[in-house]
Image 1: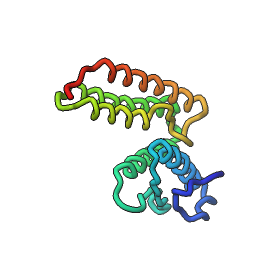
Image 2: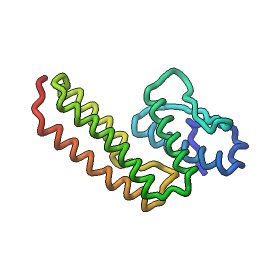
Image 3: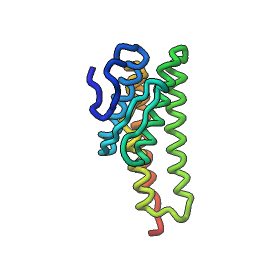
Image 4: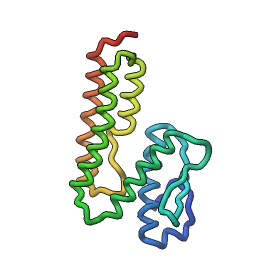
Length: 165
């Protein structure tokens, strides 16, 4: 098992199945996030609280990935939840983020540059993405497939809008 060099933890925790699962989930998703955003976020795993603490100066992206991984820990612990239910929640969160971006279209103060940055940020987060370590291979493919189309929708919307610059 390859563990992210950006995840700090005590190696003896790998002997505990719950901690091992959390460490694997955190590692997979932290590496994916750092790659998508060209960042070098480091997180410390706290076994007492089964939590993550960003290392270094405050970083909004570190807070975001920490919260995202917390939700994945919860999904992994609740094995009685069906994968379809977990996928619906994850897709709902994706749709919520998308709707926030689309609402910006209605705001007269939003210029094309700002909207384009929001679209690119959304695409970095979600296009081609699936949460790692908590879904079956079929669940991963379903989530990724349902999210891929959103990048095209946003690009088309961006091209169709005449912004006041």
